[in-house]
Length: 485
Image (cartoon, rainbow, N blue to C red; front, side, top):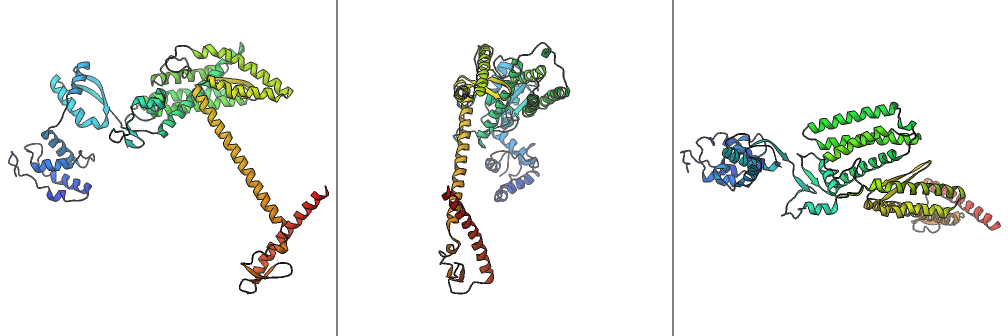
């Protein structure tokens, strides 16, 4: 069969008979390299049949001829090429736009089709200046699809996690790579959120601490200078990462590293009973807050850190209730000090109950540190209750392991005592399945077949006999001492 150009239609039967798919496509590529399929190429039924055997053009750059042939046949055959995207975008943005987004699977033919339609209509070659093709979203390693019944809507996702946690999960991955929505992915986002929130809470506690007039003028030492230098290095690294294809994953890693350095600095200051630099820590916290606002991880107006009241809260809960909580904390601290000095355990138990049971229900966490003022933190109530449950589980597991260890120790001691009670002359008599004759001391002399034991066997048994004799002597001594009391 010949095409309209007079070109003889190819015979693909030998190629299609190749069982290995990769080898089949490679053979097709070599075959097509000898044909003209752009100029003067007309479609044959054989071409259509082979075209339908391929679901998509190969991505291997070496298979250039198959990919080009595939697109040419697809263009000749036509297909359902909608105009909705081109029409809607042009209605809003006109004859050109700067950025057009979409999944990387839409690059061809969907976006190519939009360009062809729109540039033909507007008679230009700049309908879109830049395309941003994002990676796919998968669910536990599988592509999200209604047919696979693993499709999750944003509304469903928000039932399990907050908008901030979802955004952090997205930020922790490159926008152009595949993101796997799984429990591990979300756990990483939750841990990052908790890590950042604890830092903000600690900085707020430092800023609330009273200072005298001299404390308002800070003298920086080597530690402050090093942290400040690192702060500027991290800011530069964040800027560089954002300029490098909006690399938010690296940005969050740099932010985490900066917080880790600040935590080490605060811990060292606390251990040395010295006040950390308020201005330096506040500068770092404000910068991190600013970056999280840019990324949408902080939606509400918040001067420092994550808002306490949650989304949609207009009341500045922290500035409203914190003065009262500070008074309560100082009062409790004084009561605990007196209760310790006077040795009043009931008051200490009530103080612990206030910290562990009452205040967490109100979203308040108290942290007691030996020799230091109690730290007061406003935390999400559900987070505190979850922490309390996890703490109870850990304590229960410790009690269980301790009880299990005590039980095993008791069993070992009981087994040892039972063994000590056995006189050495009787220890082998019950082993009639091994020995048939014994001497006057109870030591085996012959095996079950009546054969005399070898010198090596007899020596080994005598060693066991002597060890049991020592144990039994210890038992008799203990029993004698107990009886004399």
